[in-house]
Image 1 (cartoon, rainbow, N blue to C red):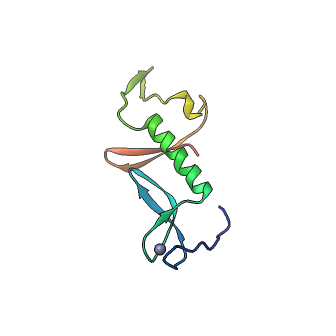
Image 2 (cartoon, protein in one colour):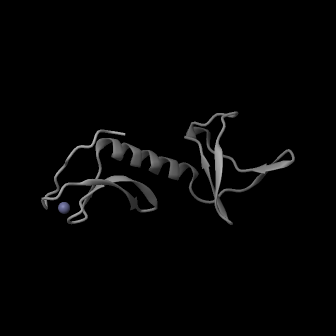
Image 3 (tube, rainbow, N blue to C red):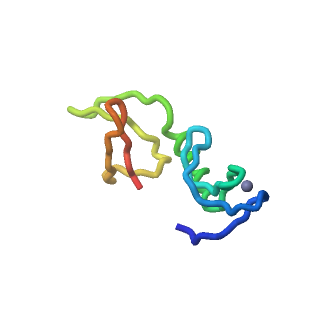
Length: 102
Ligand SMILES: [Zn+2]
């Protein structure tokens, strides 16, 4: 977490870090409580860029494949995950779950 810095918006209010939805990506950004202007710190911009890369790599439709007596989905190697690495899964609702690899 970077140190909190006070950055003033053109409208005079100070930006506050918040989660914002940019397109289909939810990420941290600086939001002006006065006019709603959104901007990114360098670190937030890099994180947003990384999220866009990940979305392009694994977003969308995938086919379920059979692996022995189990089923699975494949992920591209360029995601940077290696076989044997542990990930966690969490149920979101009856039709979705998330995979946590960070
Ligand atoms: Zn403002």
